[in-house]
Image (cartoon, rainbow over all chains, first blue to last red; front, top):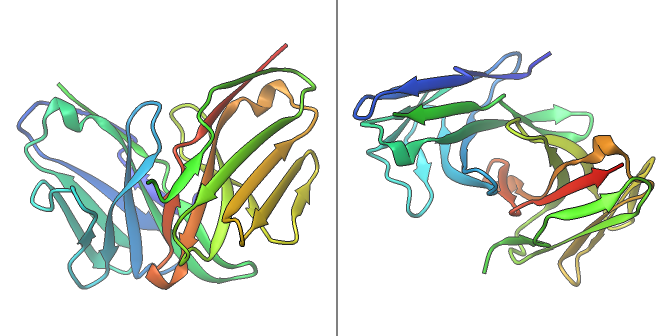
Length: 118
Length: 111
């Protein structure tokens, strides 16, 4: 079963509205989660590092006021796309690192969220 | 220069062919390397880890050359079900498990 759950899997919103995407680690605590974005036929690009209890660290070129990240608990990080525009339409995906697995650290991905802004 | 660079695709091969994917990385802080597979409109899934000693799993062989900062993936006897995008990934654990993805190489295996 899923170890990292992401919701919603698909969302369509009107231009100018805000959309929240949730990323949950289901049976482990994740002090750090990552948010990625992927355009069609392109690679996943890291947007930001979400740190539990502190501010997220954004990659260069990512607007922190547009992509709000809140990591309020050890199992939940949220990404809010504010005032969404059609160019924000993309595949957003989170990941979390689980430490102490037989292979050391294991990275788990959420199922991803398809955002379409109309 | 991208931190992780892969062969541009797509690769179109017949069933049974051997396919090689190449990848280079530039960040010497990269500690571990993996190949992920991503099917269309799905999340990436771990295919295999990459070690300096080489890693083989059935028809798949991965190799890491730290001196050259080069990673490879070989698929032998390719199947239709191997059609996907293959992503070369570097992980920086001292940054909490930050993943750096290559741009991916699309593979299409034809009958």
